[in-house]
Amino acid sequence: MSDQFEPSELPKPAGLAPAKVSLEAGKNYAYCTCGLSSNQPFCDGAHKGTGFAPHKFTAEEDCSMMMCMCKKTGNTPRCDGTHKSLPQDA
Image (cartoon, rainbow, N blue to C red; front, side):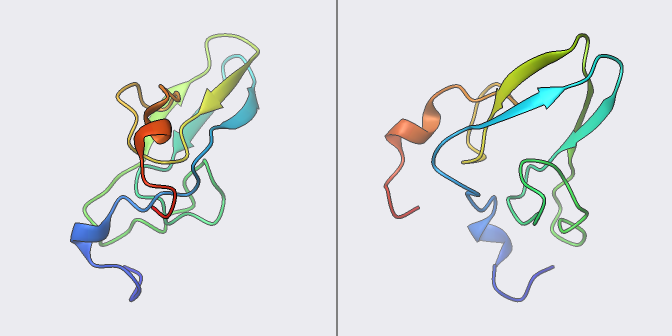
């Protein structure tokens, strides 16, 4: 785990606005749930040792998706607007 964050401080918000990503039908994706990945919004393995794991999914069709960057969504990995209610310095 990163020395910068205690487990109680995770998930770390990676941003306060969603990321629009293009997904390919049939391709597997791993969404970062801890906020530590340097490849946001996707997992790069930075969660190891934190108790977090990526949210894995397969795109059902070619599409664009607004993916959560604040890591507080109730509809993982999609943004549900929760970031609008977070403090701007989160």
